[in-house]
Image (tube, rainbow, N blue to C red; front, top):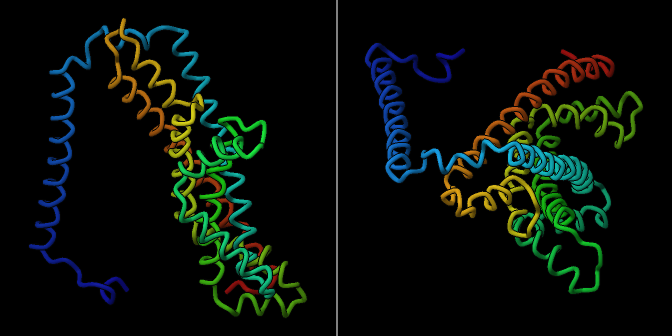
Length: 280
């Protein structure tokens, strides 16, 4: 089958591919080595700049702000998924009165940058008389509105990409249109679009850092605070390096959880398809 899709590489092509792979690795390693060298030359690895990270109070605060980041991410992820599913079903509704508003809602909030949404919620709503808007609420609402609209298109595309026969088979066994979408189509759409959904969840996790600009006390906000401590040499770069490591670790954990969910969903979809007579 693979030979039908593309030509099998010959000896010269395989040698060339190996050379390109090695060359790419060497370039990447060289860039990283140069960056580390410049950091070392500018004194970014001196003990004075890293001393602040050895304090138990600082380490405890990092755990606290990581918890705040995960709290905002969890609320935003759940809200975005729910909003995305609702908007996707709205886009696929038969009624024009449901379909058109969902279309414009999706297009509007996909076009507005997340930071602008956060600032509108945090600074604009209190100016309009809305009370009780905290940085956490502004971060979560902004992330939900934007990412929910993006995920709506992901779910809609996933559902519409499925064979029409599956929808017709579900209706033939007596399921309503809503049950067909919820029980048959949505699980398969989520499974087929899971890589895109995971990527969007990673975006949500990273975009929580935008809360720094509206004083939400998350990882980047605390790193900026540590970087401003002049008595420890203003360790801006070390603080950002620690922050980068934290975000990389959180994203890797999220990807691992997503792979576990994918395997669970795969088995569940097979069971559902078997029950409605859609399994091959």
